Length: 503
Ligand code: NAD
Image (cartoon, rainbow, N blue to C red; front, side, top):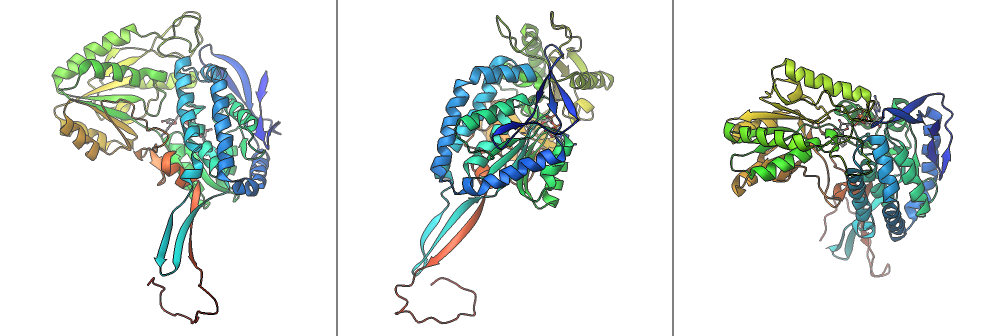
């Protein structure tokens, strides 16, 4: 059984742990590898190496750091097939979706290639007579990333390309459920010319995370995962004096207005609800249909669309499946528990995905696409994040009731509206309490040069990931005010005891 180790100071380093976690292929249910659960001393040694590499890397000209990113980008492209297969084998998502995830990560690398421009700071000449002012955006030091299972490539790449390009060093703690990809990324960064110690990977669980949250050498922590853990990470990192951004869970709603293009909305809703088996933080889990007429039509068209969907392994010889398995047996059972609770609490189960058999993959963790109608806000399936292929339809009498539902929900990651009316769309974009908004776009994931993040209990901390917020997060501003006397001889110097103001 292959054991996945750590990557510290430019090489694979064996952990001194006696704790391991199994890694499965979710499509077959077979254990394929095991991963080390690092000890405190493993993590300390990664931080030490990152700390040692920092001064030199921080002083490396941004253009040279950007060139490493350019090379890394071309290596990601050259190795796309291997990386996508690895994602699919350990996560379960279908191959083309794994390629899509890699592309979204690659776009952040492309953004980081522009770091000499992004990190220029600001400058003002003559802020006073003969006085100039400029700001420098300096790196922080050792930064840590703690990432979830659902995007083993994209979410780490939301973080480390910008952290590294701005001159920091990085310790990544990926999900123990699919850790292999992070080590592959570490090898590619090395091949791209990144100096040893700048990027390190430690595998593990809470024991490893707690070292990253408390060690005084770690300056900043980026976290993406479930909300209870995000709260813990944010509180602990902040209490230990660290800068922190912690992105949590979601319950993404869309409003379907009576004037929407139903065919377009239906296709968008099917893809956004069931793509990646609903294991996306931007997956659509609730459709609020305004009026019974459009709700009835939607239920009927969704039922037909779901009927044509294929569920199976992420990698196939012939035609690709629409949806793969979920991540683990435990998670499958949790999703089935939610479906049972929906039935028990009175929602109408229109399509039942509970008994999903995939021939030749009897031990895989499959849940079929599931559709509920007549869901009400007091039901558990409405209130909680299911993180599986379960779509709920809530019926609302009017737009305002639909908007109020979204605004009262504990989460506020993505939200969308389907309508042909520009004024309604504009009003929705203005009034909805969510960080990312789509107008006739079901998964409004911002591009790398914008920033990604939700509102309410979907994020803790003031700065989002990537885009300008990402650059801000991984740098600190220093503002320098300069006066060069024309000549020391000519100037009469005297002390001033009032608050300096510019003349
Ligand atoms: P998770 O919270 O279980 O794990 C995330 C990370 O935290 C992992 O690295 C894990 O090892 C670590 N962790 C888990 N328990 C911990 C503990 N007690 N103490 C310290 N660290 C701990 O999340 P997951 O199941 O891997 O991922 C799914 C969740 O991530 C969903 O809730 C999803 O919405 C969320 N997510 C959010 C976004 C976003 O941008 N908001 C993006 C992707 C995923």
